Amino acid sequence: MCEIHFVKPIGRKINKRDLDELMKIMRISAETNDDGFGLFNEKGVIFKRGEKFSKKYKQKIYDLYLGSEWVVAHNRLATHGEPKKINSHPFKNSKWVWVHNGIIQNHKLIEAEFGLRFNVDSEIIGKLALKLGLERAFNELAGSFSVFIYNFQQKKLYYVRHNADFYFRLISDGKDKILIGDTSQSNLNCFYNTFTDTCFGIKVRKYKILGFLTPKENWIYRINSRIEKWKRIEPKAYETYYTYYTYNKISSKDLEYAISDMLGLSVKVRRTADYFYVECDEYAKSILIANFGKHFELRNGILRIHESAIDELLDDMYYGRWYDV
Image 1: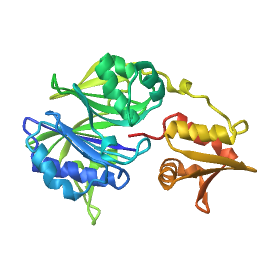
Image 2: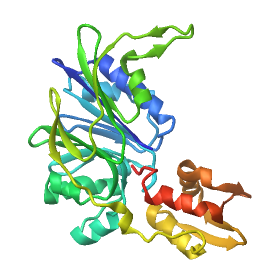
Image 3: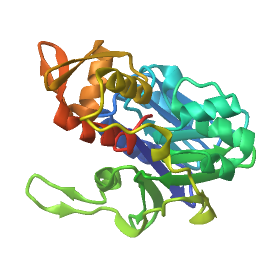
Image 4: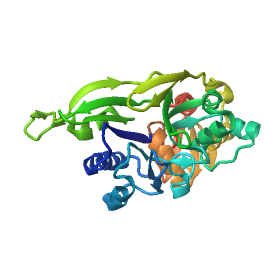
């Protein structure tokens, strides 16, 4: 899954220590989310690349984000769309900047209904917000999403989640207070050494945790000096958008269509006895292994799946246990 990271000092601007901590978390995240990264701040300044984040970008990030009020960062694990700059987050239009973790499962229906064009489904969010307004845009979505979206015209930052995780903490070292957030709780423990085990087994806590918040699902929050509920949303039920097959009825063509349609990958499926064989290029194979490897075996360079595992595979694809970003 992709990961989103957030840092906002209270009562001061972002300094080098804040950016060092943020980049530390981005490097940790990049070990499993290495298909791109990006950042943005309250000025709408975007820096992104379609490759694994590394220390070589340290000075560039200092140059762009020192003195910011806050920074949102994103590490990408590609599922829809190739690992390249244009598909990395954040995305931006004439009003909104946004990052997304999750999958918009009704993206084809939205494309047809609203006439939108996009490379990856995450782009839909800001394009719909521009067309419909923020609340209605999220009501049109089906799937899973964790989203930071910023109206840089009005200088307002929002967060919302549905079927996806995110956590906030307010921390202090006795002088500064800092609001941090992350997709992963383990990342939060590494952020500013709020919890560190040394090699001697001694627990060191330099920053004290003053408070924490797990945002409620289906609420849009406004983030300024505090995190406030703004509006409730009602996303669409996504399980109704696709035909669900069971393994005793599914054909090789059905499985081929399901994988191609849901993941945007080009595959060929053939069946022999009790197994389905999935033939694809190395990129598609890596995506299938990374997200659904527990269901497949690799035989002579070809992925295969037993018919008894098809139900669980379809559950994992259709019911959002993987994330597109």
